[in-house]
Length: 111
Length: 121
Image (cartoon, rainbow over all chains, first blue to last red):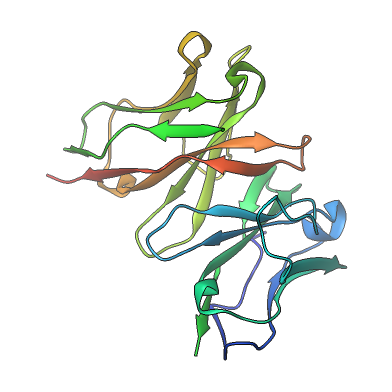
């Protein structure tokens, strides 16, 4: 078993909608159906972006949304802004590894 | 406001001892788990383990060959990450973070400022 897989990079123009996938397996997302997402701005500390699949902490803009289906999850950024340029990580629990796992991470670039 | 403040950067040689700290404030430190996350330069996040300060129960990640230990002193609202014998491969930034949620569904809602550990001879 391995950690959830994310595309290494995603890019979009300001105002566009981009989505980041988090591809898991039947031992993590597929069974637990619980995913969290974190944003790490360049050179900064990671920040909780989405918890419990689709919940935004106070202060997180509504343009960030998330969902999951089957063994995958996705994070969407609507109305992409320059300040959204960052690394994004999904996180879940893997029953076979008996461990909490982060996805491989995706760098979002605003063109 | 909830804060986790970590100790400053550390530079050590292989084989040396190191303990880094994470002090919580603004909440009941004893009753929220504190986790540790490693990030090697240019790489992703890795879950190391977590502690429940009230009874000092520690859960380590099976993914790590654990030559480190996690502890906490609830009387001073501080969690620790400790190595008895550092390796060059321990060079990374280490974050502490508060855990919320239920077992198997934990998430990290507040993060410390990070501690850079550099190990070289």
